[in-house]
Picture 1 (cartoon, rainbow, N blue to C red):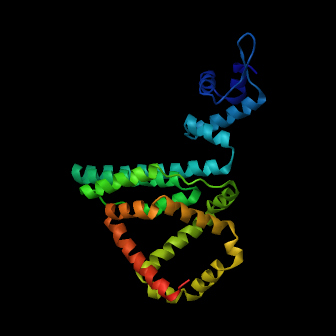
Picture 2: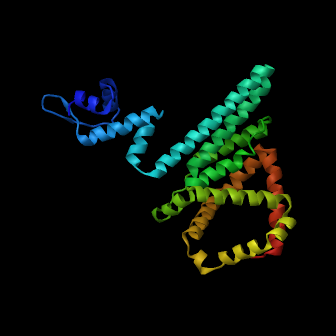
Picture 3: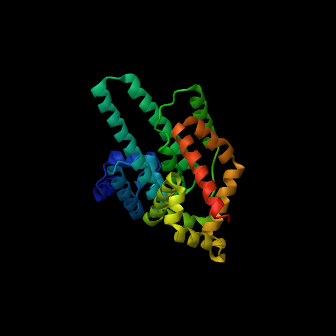
Length: 284
């Protein structure tokens, strides 16, 4: 097909097709007389490009989706779009507050906190694989809503950014399937329930252990079983633990988070106390 034919066949304009060719999204053959010859495969690819452009995707996003050709790439893009949407909604809320109050200083501090929160969240998602990165981003974001006021907080923020910029956990190929399972709705639900359980346990560890005694004992027994110890989940957990230890997660990132966020510092103190109580009862 020549460009006029593929344009009629797909509904894309000649100008758009030329643009996609210039960007490398389409790579038709070129005849001896200089005409571009588009195959049926090119036409099918162009239909995908047109649809994705109509859905608001950038050229680079389209390239990544089509070249990857799997659901994981779509899932990552959707999650990024959801984060962007949440950020836009936050900005609209701040604009409304500014319109009502005209307090530029107060709204400016909230916007600065929001930007800091987004920067840290984006880097956590990049540094850690799949849903685990998203989980960390959501977990820490709740403690990053306070304005950065002191020089110590500013220094802690810069330290966190520099630390995360140099961090990248590489997932072995044989564990990628596990991460894909974790990134399903069922996997996300497990993480959400786990996070909620930790919050409840932190607030009243004695009561939580009493109310969930049977579940705790079943879980601990399972983690001691050969089934679990030989599972991909156990291997991934151990690899993440070793990675975090080697890369200073607990000696650099966590102390800096405590200096940056008073609410996280308070939460971690309660978490450590809950862990002490739990360890006294369940020594393993």
